[in-house]
Length: 112
Image: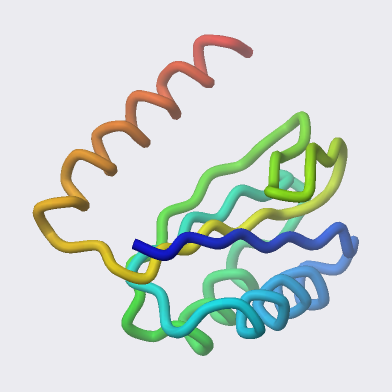
C-alpha cells in the first residue's frame, strides 16, 4: 500500500485545496482513499467540489481540526488543511480503517 500526504496553509479555500491537490499529483497516482483534515474556517463545499473533480472514484473522509495538523513535513498550527492518500485499499482493509478513524474522531471529541 502506498501512502502519501500533502498540505496547504493558504487562507483561501479554493487556493488551499488546489495547492494540496497539485502537490499530491506529483507524488501518487489515483488514490483509493483520501482523508482530509482542515481548519473550520474553510468552505467545505469548495473542498468537496475540487476533490470530486480531481479524484472522482476515490472514497473521501474528512474532519475539522481546531488546533492544526500533522504531515510528514511536521506539525502546522492554525489555518490549513492536510490530505492523506492511499493507493490500494481493499474493502476488507477499509472496514477496520474506518472503525479506527471513527474511534479516533470520538476520542478527539472528548479532548475538547
